[in-house]
Length: 158
Ligand code: PNS
Image 1 (cartoon, rainbow, N blue to C red):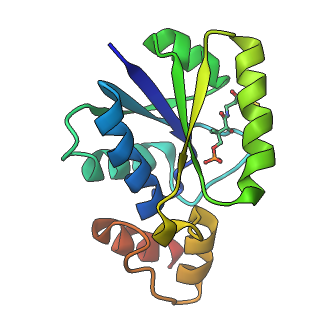
Image 2 (cartoon, rainbow, N blue to C red; image 1 turned 45 degrees about the horizontal axis):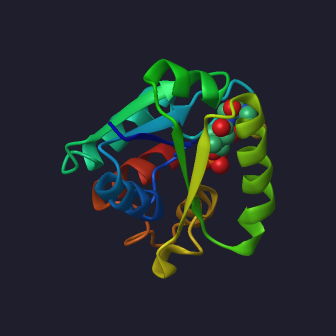
């Protein structure tokens, strides 16, 4: 079974993330969205809220599951018996950091491969931080995050 993990902070999930999830679900038998529990960084949403939000929007994709993890990504990979990490690439600026992480993960476990998927051009400028900034000052985030997530973002930022 071809199983992949799509890791990230997802604070909150964006339409760019969802696009990568949908496309990966067509390539792999199973995709696990791995939500990082980052003890050093307090996010807008709690990990449980992020997991629930993602679960609600990935319902149409029957082979997609959502799990939170702390520590190293490769430990989650081992636990789930997954060999492929999926990453979305938006711009050249993403490359350096992603290249470093891919090499580090491969060094930690040479059986692990990172697969990069180019973002859909219409979401290439999207990031969770940009969405939070726009929403914080009352800007429109329609079409940037799933519709069901919009009120949750505004509610949190109140
Ligand atoms: O959405 P993000 O914040 O860009 O995602 C970053 C993430 C979660 C993919 C990355 O921080 C990660 O994999 N963290 C787990 C720690 C780890 O395994 N580090 C080793 C690779 S450098």
